[in-house]
Image (cartoon, rainbow, N blue to C red; front, side):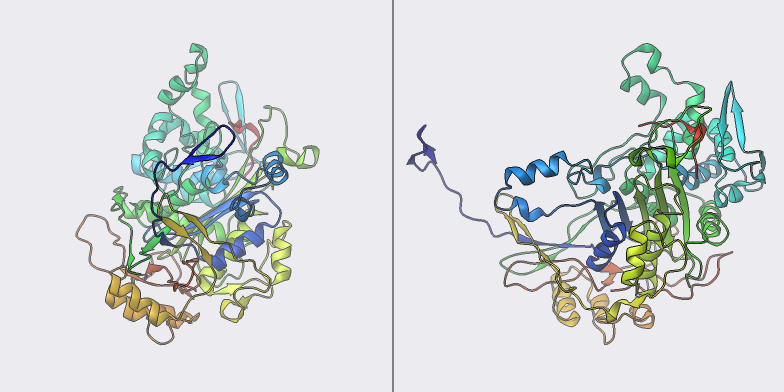
Amino acid sequence: METTAGGFIVRRLSSTPAVPGKTVVLSIDIRLQKLVEDLFGSRRGALVAIDPRDGQVLAFVSKPTFDPNLFVDGIDQDSWQALNDSADKPLLNRALRGTYPPGSTYKPFMALAALETGKRKPGDTIYDPGYWIYGNHRFRSPEAGGLGMVNLARAITMSSNVYFYILAHDIGVDAIHDFMAPLGFGQRTGIDLQGEARGVLPSQEWKRKTFKRPAQQRWLPGETISLGIGQGYNNFTMLQVSHALATMVNGGNNYQPRVALALQDAVSHQFVRPDRNKPVYLGYKPENVQLVKNAMVNVTVAGTSRMSFSGAGYVSGGKTGTAQAVTLGQHQRYSASAMSERKRDHSLYEAFAPADHPTIALAVIVENAGFGATAAAPIARRVLDYWIKGLYPSEADIEAVSHGGGAGNPGGSRPVATLPWPPAGMKLLTPVRNSNRGVTAISALTGPSAPALTHAMASSGAVPPAQAAAAAAPGSAAAPSAAAASGAASQASAASAPPPYAPPPAALRLNQLFLRLPGQGSIPRPVPAPAPSAPASGLAPETARRVPPAPAAASAVRR
């Protein structure tokens, strides 16, 4: 429209007819999404969960959050100012753009780098006295007296700082960079969301390009040491950590993470799966991957997260992490009680399950919450309970975890199938249309029956007919039972490429995040069914395997 200075319309210059938007179907499990948000409570942080078999994102949580409905008709000044001025930064998508030192969650990847580059053999040992002196600097560990003799596996299980100090020195900053970059650290993963942060994976070249003064551009040998325990210049998103973990535990197949599962045409109502790149195989030796995975399993059995995973009833792998939010001096000891809340250590945890054939890999951070086993690990435990065993924690347990408790065995868990959905009082999101982009996304909470959905997906080619039929079989639609989920699993196609692991074809899973247009039906996401495989060597068989509906110095770092 052409208007005068006073705002009066003079004439219409052109017009564009409205374009029917497409429905976007997400891979997000809405019940899991809500559960994680409740477990965080009012705390700050992020969690990203990925299916290692295909890269589909299962949960993508950033806390605190905000109501997007405020922006539909134009946000008022007071609300906008409150969001912008909040010290908690609710407008920051921490899962996508929040970067943090990974702390000790970096150690399994360092261990794999050591094995793959030949810098360490599984039986190589060092003595950990609780510190390591390099030059005139004393790099410390939290254990009084150290851990004694440790090999690579024990160094992961007991989180030996000294082992990884020495390892980082032996590998070198550039070799660390070259190994970690293909895993996605310090790189954009290529997720189908805008605004992804790159983070920092340091190298000598990176430092030369980043700093202006020549004295600052030179890489100092001591700067390499802290990289081994996930400190120093290391800064990554939880998306990058979970993506790297998913890549490692599936044997080295790098899938681009995806939240969009399918598109539905508004006119034809046909479903189409978006094109995606084939996974890149990183060529890891299976025995090296298995050694690291076994050590991470021991973390949950005899290591730093054993309390959080006591009595789990399934075998998972994990690693705690504690990352400094502020730099401490060499002779300064960490004391949470002596620091303001926002200067305390971050609590991190990464996990995968089931151990022998993972269907979920996650990374979680709780800002300024302290030791990784105290705040982050209990959240991860409840996520895995939900995903592997179909259990939902009690309201009392959720409340305890949201306030930093719940390190022990969860109490009062309920089968997911017994919970009403949507929960009473849950507010549905208002449809948001964008005619310029031709896409309409609406968050819904319920959908039609599985047989109709699977038929629609299969007829559109979004799901192979055989897998759709299996998913629509009696018991698989509303089936929160392990037997039903296991019975719906189909054989994966044999891989012709070098990778030892081939992604299985798609099936259907319940409790998805539904997206739909007004007056149209909804569809759930298709997901790969686990390929049958024998338990990995050294790992106990799974008891349940269902698929339910700023740099900090290393001198004072803790696990």
